[in-house]
Image 1 (cartoon, helix red, strand yellow):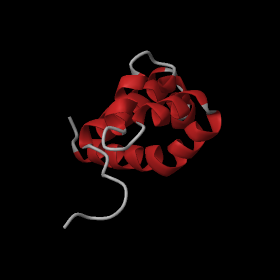
Image 2 (image 1 turned 135 degrees about the vertical axis):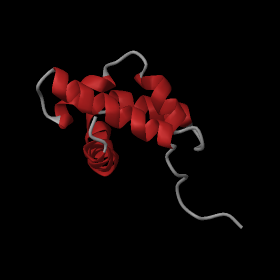
Image 3 (image 1 turned 45 degrees about the horizontal axis):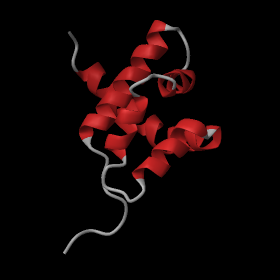
Image 4 (image 1 turned 30 degrees about the vertical axis):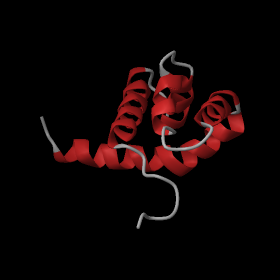
Length: 97
């Protein structure tokens, strides 16, 4: 018997988003919030979001909504990206190269 609720986000998508947001925020000297909006404008962002929504019905609808609606972008950041960044930063701080 399966679990109820939304399917889990793959680690590939989490790590890719967190890495690029952190990279953009350092490169352009801006907050992660602004870096998230810069990432949305990238040409490969739609493909990444299709991977994120691959287990849902109407994934093209959700991808289009996230790429076009500013309100959806803000909500996605507050619900998902913040936690992705926190986990990624903690992991990077533990690994001192």
